[in-house]
Image 1 (cartoon, rainbow, N blue to C red):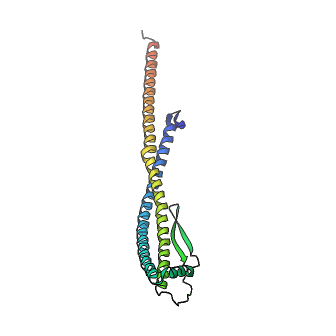
Image 2: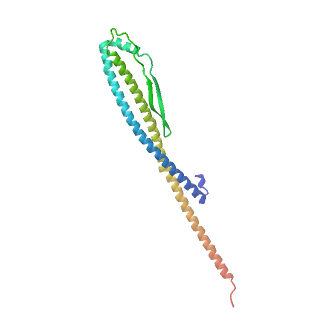
Length: 215
């Protein structure tokens, strides 16, 4: 700390200011950490729900896809793929939490099953398409929840490291420097008092020696 090279009262005030600033910073970061921790816990619950929904939708899709393949064969599966020709349109909505931007929800326009010539096609085809659309929407919701947890968990980890850096490194270093400076200032004060007392006593002795004696 170059500001402390000269020592003295100004350096002590400087250190006290730095310590106060570090403590305020640690308090603010700790409050941010607590808020992020609660938000990550909430989003983690949302992620668990989204994963469960996606797993259920995929299991349903497996059932109907197997039925379509068994009843209609590869031809119907190919026709179903061609019938779902339009791409899905997805819009992700974002939110700022404690300075961290993360996805919060999504809206989507999923492809619908175009009209088909029903002659020779299995009746399992429409439920298969519906299951596919549900699995796609579940995958989008799970992706949004996963990314939100990832981003806020990263910010939580970074904030935790900053709090530890201040409380375990920065503050102890400043407090140690203040203790050393206080000790040095106390020694200087004792030396100045001792020198002042010595100068006073010397002045008193000189005055006594120079005083005229009475006859």
